[in-house]
Image (cartoon, rainbow, N blue to C red; front, top):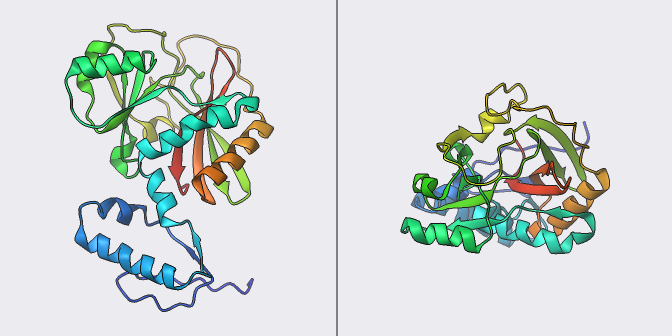
Length: 267
């Protein structure tokens, strides 16, 4: 009733248009195009239409979206937030890119050199699809044998088992609280690697041993709305995107707002 006509686009057919705005979630196609010629062709057709119609608004541009599908790329962006948002005490945990299976001692050495601390969270490089939610919590240098490159290792920050998911839609954003991993003792220990699905752990109604705190801790203050707004503004510029999600936690020791992931177009 607002004079907006919504048309579903069939990528297997020539795009006719004209379109004022195209909202897409081509993340599956982008990931598949790495190894599938049919997906490559669909993307090429789509991109050639977009290039030939520069006045059509695309939410969001394919190159911007591609970097969010690759945790190596998105974590490099996250790691720069510390300097650009220093006044807001916003940071992201130390992390390490593991490109390919190499000998255990060189990975252990890199973990030390990069200043990571146990426990570590291991996440797949590809940040899309069901496998991207399969993560592990690694408690010692010896347990680094459990990782499956390509992946990222990220220092686990105790955050009182609360995750704040921020959904960004243009210049507006919305936050929801979700269950998250409980606190673990800092430093290496001989605990076995925990494999978990982050989607299951952080579902609104999740009740898991991994989210139940072992100790009573005072309630953490929610993230400052001004700090979240500053974070969103900075990420919109850095990413060149209007639709995305950010996962943030509050460090229980320093109360620092900590960015742990950036996600494609929120579900």
